[in-house]
Image 1 (cartoon, helix red, strand yellow):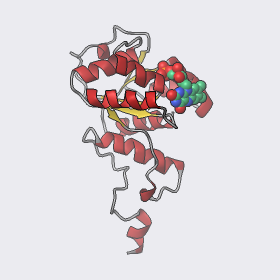
Image 2 (spheres, helix red, strand yellow; image 1 turned 45 degrees about the vertical axis):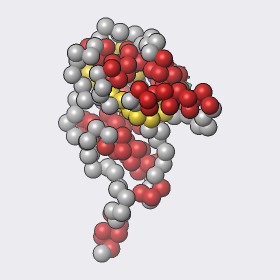
Image 3 (cartoon, protein in one colour; image 1 turned 120 degrees about the vertical axis):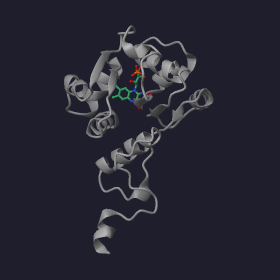
Length: 181
Ligand SMILES: Cc1cc2nc3c(=O)[nH]c(=O)nc-3n(C[C@H](O)[C@H](O)[C@H](O)COP(=O)(O)O)c2cc1C
């Protein structure tokens, strides 16, 4: 859940308006993985919707958005988006993102993957989605979990042409190395 939390914080810092949908399961997972309350999570976004609010603005392609990131994305949500049988605002908005040919980035959190998962991912990639599991990038020499999270979130934002300055890019010296030279 820290991925979604950090993503919202970064979007606010770089001045990108955010619209948030939190699934019921994500609310449960938030309590398992953090000390944050759902209201605090929602307060990080500019606009927040109930997952059942299928009539919300983001359910329509006429709503102008840069795209959508599902962070993190469960196998259930991934599979629902792949089928097009979208039962919540979360998956409906993702479906709309695909039909409008806008970037849809799915930070899938599951491992290992069985053949069905992989087939679903292939189907989504063929439909234009970007499957971006938050795999740690050790070349960035992360020192903390925050470093890993920042890198994953920053690389997801790269897909939208947004540079929040939180990715240590390949070949760039670490901050310590910069100080040493
Ligand atoms: C603490 C917790 C962690 C979970 N982690 C995962 C996970 O990593 N990947 C996954 O696909 N499902 C995971 N699940 C199960 C999903 O929450 C479950 O499949 C749910 O139906 C997903 O619903 P959603 O896609 O509407 O959020 C987890 C559940 C809990 C309570």
